[in-house]
Length: 50
Image 1 (spheres, rainbow, N blue to C red):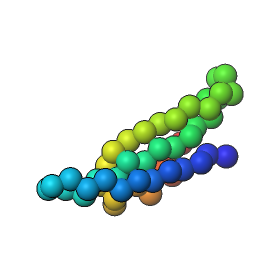
Image 2: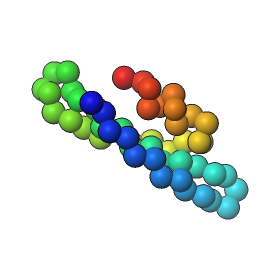
Image 3: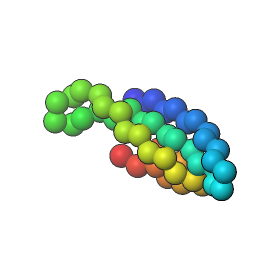
């Protein structure tokens, strides 16, 4: 089960969102965190990717 965290960052010219996804490694079974800064429209597709 992956947890998700979304924080909204606002800069002078663009509105950006930092998304953090917890992903389980198929090889070791350990969880790792994947972070990305993107536009708010791209967040759903980022969280749905495996």
